[in-house]
Image (tube, rainbow, N blue to C red; front, side):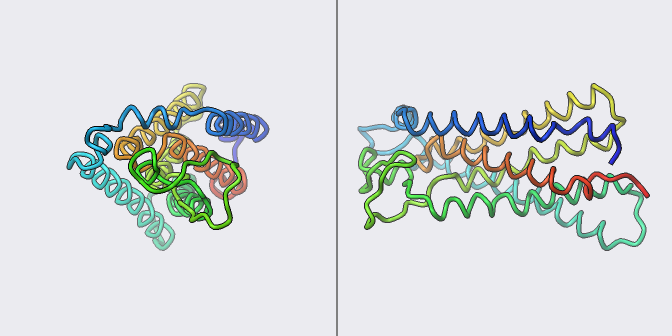
Length: 242
């Protein structure tokens, strides 16, 4: 990998420090505040006994359409990667092919990682809680849970994971001429796509399907996974032409 390309990637120690800090802040926010409940209460109507978009067609349509489009985009990268790996001749450089492979790998594995965490989560979705007309109790992260309690499997957000592979597309800037401007654009693209993914996922808060922290935890896990793959395999994904 060229020195210029290495300069586009944050130092692992810096990334680890930032992710650790964000993880601690998110843990404190979820563990010792009631922000999740207060935010969900804003979108819950006591009179109707439902969340604002819980039974509205717009909520279901936005949920389904955006998720389907994200899946189609992910499959597009995967099929493109498969084609590039099988094609004997292509006008793509090695660096361009490797960035497509990397994005495809993140798109395939990131939802699986989020799903694994979710399978062992005791957290229930908001509309399944007593406070919002359901039958289950609300637990903070790391609360002591009775052994006979049924797992809610709602944290982190699986829906958000449909979008949170998208920030990996920032590596496409690695194929440009490496300048300070390129580095800024790559980082801006990464952050913008995270915000975009969180915005699309927020529809589930309006539908009572997730707390806001569930979406944030998905973003944290997805980001940590994306950088882990980048650092573990950067020698393969970003190497120069032979």
